[in-house]
Amino acid sequence: MPARVHGVLSLIAFAGAVVIAALAGWSESPALGIAYAALALVSLLVTIAVFCGKCANRDHCGHVVPGQIARLMRRELRRGPYTSAELALTSIALVLVFLLPLGWLWRFPLALGGFCLLLLLGSIDIRARVCAACKNAACPLSGK
Ligand code: SF4
Image (tube, rainbow, N blue to C red):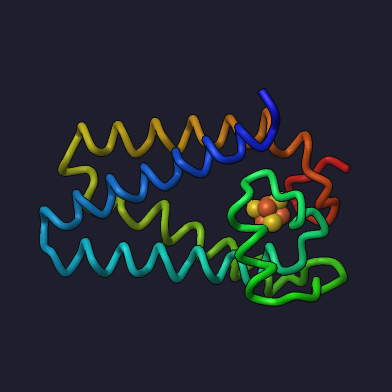
């Protein structure tokens, strides 16, 4: 299976995890569900602007969609290695999206299981198939 198929599948797995977390949050309180969904969207856009905007592989993005959005946000590629601030901002955005929901998901064991399973499958897929074909040598996950 081509790496881009794995990239899209992993993106779908992460999106599924976010939907599960948002629905569980909504069942606690609609405001929580909406706030989390908004946070996930903002975090995604921040990650794309900061991280994908410097990715030398964005025109051949393994996840397809982030690379295209990065190009829409800024036509020219920002060059150079990632700065500590850029890495910190990206990490904070991702940690907020994937750790914050644990604060309410623990009350919904089935949803928690689905959330963790989708994150695990998506992460394994990325490390095993997507990273191997990615040419963003500046990425901290790159072994190049
Ligand atoms: S391959 Fe590049 S553009 Fe695609 S998600 Fe990874 S960092 Fe972003």
